[in-house]
Amino acid sequence: MDFHRNPSTNSASSSTSSTSSAAAHHQPPPSSATDNDPMHSWWESVSKQRSRILSLAALLPSDGVAVSSLADSDRPAVSLLSSPSAYSLISSALSSPKSGSGSDRLCQWLYETFQSSDPHLRLLVLSFLPLLSGIYLSRVHSSDSSSLPSLAGFEAVLLAVYSSEAKSRAGKPLLVQIPDLSQPSLYHAPRNKPVDDRSRQSVGVLSPPLEPHLAVKSTKRAIIVGTALDCYYKQVSQMPAWSKLDFCKFAAAWAGQDCPCRTKLDRDEDNHHENGNVNGNGHIRLLREDSGFSNGTRSGDGDEVDYEDDVIKEVVVVEMNNLGINEENLETKGVRIPLPWELLRPVVTILGHCLFGPLNSQDVKDSASVAVRCLYARASHDLAPQAILALQSLIRLDKNARAAATTAATVTTNASSNANTPSKAKKPEILLVSK
Image 1 (cartoon, helix red, strand yellow):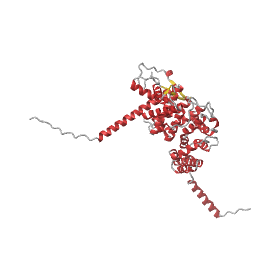
Image 2 (tube, helix red, strand yellow):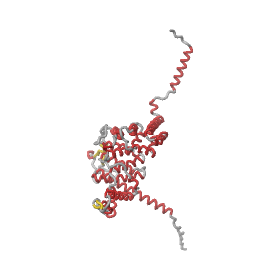
Image 3 (tube, helix red, strand yellow):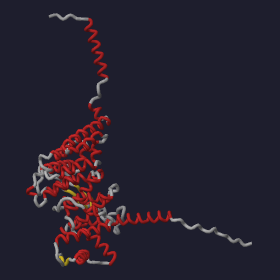
Image 4 (spheres, one colour):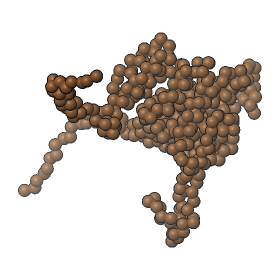
């Protein structure tokens, strides 16, 4: 079969070639150029956040419409992070009795979202870490933990955060340089001539190298949760107030509720300033005498346990009110749990930020103040020297900061009142001139 050349075909082919060459000049840039475009990266991040938030709204009850509406904002993850209504919905879902199982779709959403490379989505998952870890530890150590369903969903999220932190450390321990007082610094000059001896420099191990774990064993539970809280602490300055409040309330509950020793340091220092020197257990003896107890036994009729708990709580409320802390902040969540140093160290570190972070609300600072005193009482009972020293320092710094704030407020009030008080007009001075 013969093919005949048609001149019109040549013209068509030429036009086609010219069209293709023109189109080549208008093709989208290659992927490398697209990746470097900040607008494209921003839009890709927003699209990913909207997709994840819409999938989250589908997991929540009918009120999830409030969550899905946040996906339309320019910063969906940040909008969800700062939404009280969204937090209430997610908190209720995580706190339900059947939550945390391997088939829990909300835990699956948290796990998959944390695997994302988007930092805002990872921050969103970390903001729920205090609530998740608090519920998890409280259920594991509750009295009826044997009848509880599996907590594989909670453990999967904790393991994801742990693995991420282990990967970032690259098998290296966290070290801290211990100051050598024989060497000069910005704050002191040694009495003796300093000796430049490199071997005298001491390094402390804050956290040992992390081992990979595929499951949460009872012997490794503290280090896994503690490492996850270390990851939370790295972003704690960006966390909303409700996340920090949850953490403080769980920390107070983990230490044990309504222990009179939580105000021991405050009472000891106040009595020392007022009476010179006093027995360290004076406040406990005073508590028992005033409340009708002698060696822990009430001298009267009634329910001894309930009465003692009420008296202890009243004393705690009085001490907290003396520090300017509202009684509402004494509300706690969870149950008393074991507190090894692997878990307690990051807890104390986060509470330090909650106490003295410059942008923290007063509610966060008050809740952290209560939690620190609860943990101090627990450390005193457990005879944990590291925890006692750290928590004692936080309590004293907190008292000094509150005293300074009270003094500053008093000075400001007096200055404003003096400025508003009309002063008497001075009589004109009369100068006598001799002739």
